[in-house]
Image 1 (cartoon, rainbow, N blue to C red):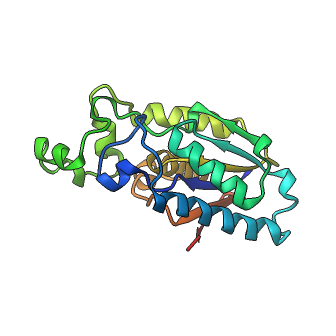
Image 2: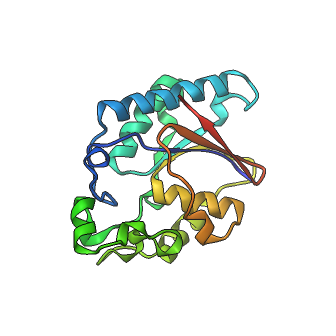
Length: 202
């Protein structure tokens, strides 16, 4: 299996304001930029130890959305990864939240009482008008994962929901259970040999 270091983008303005983001976008906050630097420092430690091989063996793939591109740039600079190794792949984008993109979650909760309490495959993001289904997200992420060779070493910068789905696919776990995982901005996931380790960066 490929070896993947999976990172979620740092905190954004809309994260802080409690807005639905999806394919909408907002820049990193100062805290988000600091989180990206923390990712980079942890990666530099991991790669510098020599256990993961030569850093030149690693390539960086990111969602093209601005918050991930920002995170990737900071992370690569701090981790001393080659900027020329960065590619952007639409399949790593967050779930599309359709008409709810940019909507304050408080307003969403007022319109649809109890909706934010939904979890698993019933998660509210898959019920957005004009949005993307769990099946569609799974299909594109599975395609991306299947395109990696067994010996590939990849740093992947993606999103909260997309990251949960991707981790579930890597483990071959129940999709509902995978969607109940967390989406940290202070930890990364080391995915190797069919196992996943959560590594704090704080």
